[in-house]
Image 1 (cartoon, rainbow, N blue to C red):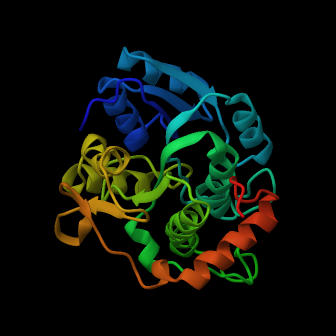
Image 2: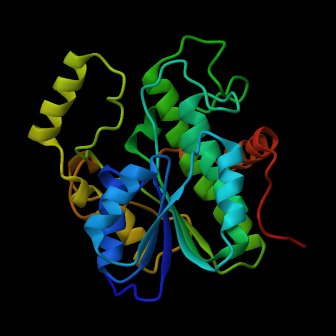
Length: 287
């Protein structure tokens, strides 16, 4: 990873797991890292372990008012925004604005944050997706999954597919606006984190933790695709993941995406739906 001295990076969800590992690596490389987190006390605890130029700011991606407050506070140039935060496994839960918690946090929250910060961003936006996008579908007639049987895989897969479609459409709009900012995506493979275990039965959590110890790579290794996307010269809309079997672990490389995640018409339609739901539009002026 190149030296990051003089660079400023905002990372959402940087107080645990892959986000914390990403923040730590960038801080050690010399970047000024802003941990944008809901739990600021946990964020401060993580920041203290870095020993470099870091700061912690409150951001709840499940609350549009919190996102607006964070964006209004930000006034300086921002080199890199890393949309890392994510939730999984909260059946029937909603954001403060009434969206499905997974879709609302993982996609709509980052959609709103990116567009509000976009006038300040100078280099790139990296959005963390997942191999789970391959099992997802965008239910345009029921984005909150209220009129069908709710399943964790269906909801999480939809939110991760939305991340990739967002990356695609953001890149198209940036290019059309003549911006030098690029939109990229990455996924960590199978990493040992607590994602999806909160609120689950103890037996399920124990099984997930055991599988993580036996088969998953560390959060530090899972952060490598994000770090690669954040620091290397890549074409817009590139997708980075592990190079091992099934993209579950390994070193970072460019990877493919499902045909659904490459659907330009669906990407544009999702963007328009996201604008309508959040009341926030593309952050740069266009001709």
